[in-house]
Amino acid sequence: MKKSQREIINIIALVIILIIAFSISNLFNKSIKEENSLHNTQNANPTTTNEIELELKESEETTYDSEQYTDLIINDLASSEEEINFSPKAAFIIDDLGYEREVAKKIMELEFPVALSILPFLQYSEFIAEEGRKNNQEIMLHLPMEPSNSSDNPGPGAIKSYMSEEEIRKSVRDCILNFPYIIGVNNHMGSKITENREIMEIVLEEIKGYNLFFIDSMTSKNSIAYQVAEEMGVKAAVRSVFLDNENDMEYIKGQMLKVQETALREGEAIAIGHSRINTFYVLKRMIPELIKAGIEIVPVSELVK
Image (cartoon, rainbow, N blue to C red; front, side, top):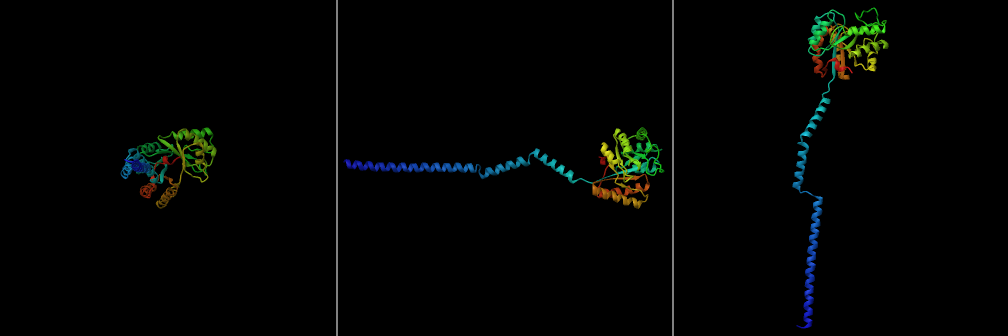
């Protein structure tokens, strides 16, 4: 073979090698790009559609089927329910007990809480306390106090403005110890005493010493008894409505409507009535109406603060 022919063959072979090398290089670069593209796609979307659905499903099961989470939901609902179901409250006290027992026994038969506030040193004071306790009624001392009109007699054991400090203390203690089961005190008459800070501080010190609450009957619009009790840390409350200043059934019904209005407006009301048959009949008839209006009838001890 001539030299010129061999040179041509070598050139053709070199060209073929270059073409093959170029093709291989293109294929290699294409493979790298596809691999990079796939890698970027996986980073941006690490799961397939099926995997995403499975992940969501697992997340839902963890969130909503967890017993612990369910318990938290139930507790939250229970808390909300207590707030939603808040109801106004009313409490009733019957004063002047101890003179007789027939009306007192009827009052004890009422099927809702009634505090029995009993005057000391009377014929039936201890009997009513014992019977009231058996009927699960709260027992209070109706503490006699001197009224503004000193000619009105508050009864035995009364606190008088002319007494010495020791006489006042002894009188309060004797009244408290006269009959059993006392959990609180409210004043009988006493407009002259409840306006007197010095005397009320003495009285309330004794009441606090026996761990009793005090309810200001508000026989005087100028009474400071509740204010003093608050200052001294004695659990206390104030009477909202007198039921039977007139012993007339229509009047008492009107006062019961005031109890309802007060409870609905202010959230609570304390009503005081007396040991009278008309008061008993109105209470028996109208308490169910208050309950229908959404008012809860509670022991008076629930409304002292």
